[in-house]
Image (cartoon, rainbow, N blue to C red; front, side):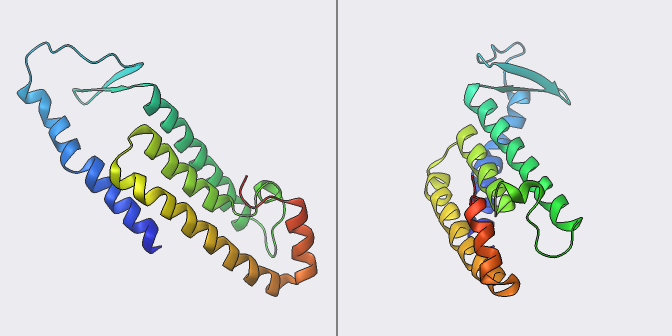
Length: 158
């Protein structure tokens, strides 16, 4: 979790710390009727106007898909016992990791920065290596032959 925690911490400090504070307080400091940017989606929440351009909408969609994949993976794991090969696990051997990677990709697409540009590939690589380690552990636990059959039928991520 170290690299993921670092990614999340940097994301929220860099994107949602000082910049978000400035953005949210800018209403009090701006002219009475400022001209809003040309967003595809505009909405107001608690007296603050928000907007999303195309890339923010694409990033939000990818983030929601990632959240759905994680939820389906958790639901499948916690409602079955033993070696799970059904549900979303019949399509991906590591749906939770795929979901986390999609969430990070959605945030990166919606609001890219230099720090996330460096950390996103590191996050993907780390989850890839972790998935390889877990596959070895599962193969030993359920039997290499049984797991190999599962590997042949099911992709690692997508």
